[in-house]
Length: 107
Length: 121
Image 1 (cartoon, rainbow over the protein chains, first blue to last red):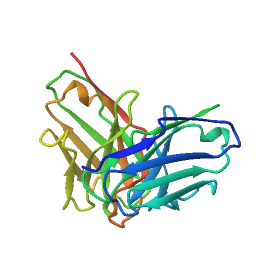
Image 2: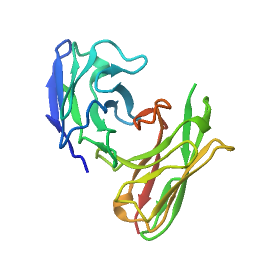
Image 3: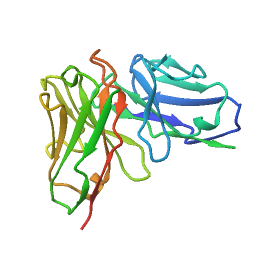
Image 4: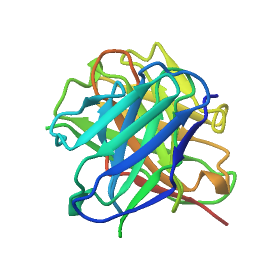
């Protein structure tokens, strides 16, 4: 099983600042990596797939990068609606696995 | 508009059974692989099971293998999860999720609102 490790667990950021979230895979997943955003009481929302392709309707301030085992989600200028929990997911191998999540909170 | 509506959650005793359903609309259900993902209270996301569009390919997490059965009825635009031998650690919100596209890659472009399953005596 591929273990996905996200860091940090919590990120405190001021509105307008940049946030950088990391996701590491225990073995290569190529570019088969997705990012999701989840707000309290809501279902997750797909942000990024293929490591760097934004899903439909996702603002340009969300950028994904990386391949192999190291991935990054960057939110260039945090808006109030971006404070949430973010998960990465690999879909290169079965079983599908998620990272433990990074909570982005208001500083 | 894609809509996924789960139902069937509730309170069940350890060792009991429950059947979850997911009613799909707004897209050609038979063209897409479908999935169940769960989230224990206050915890992260855990993939549970996936089924291909024609039910030819089925996958399970080790944690549910042999206890849960995923199925679909393309004529009824519905996805199911039969859960047997339930344990306390199965307590979670269960989400129905659709693959984003028909590429064959299993990541989740659409999600339902979830249904809560509580396993407790």
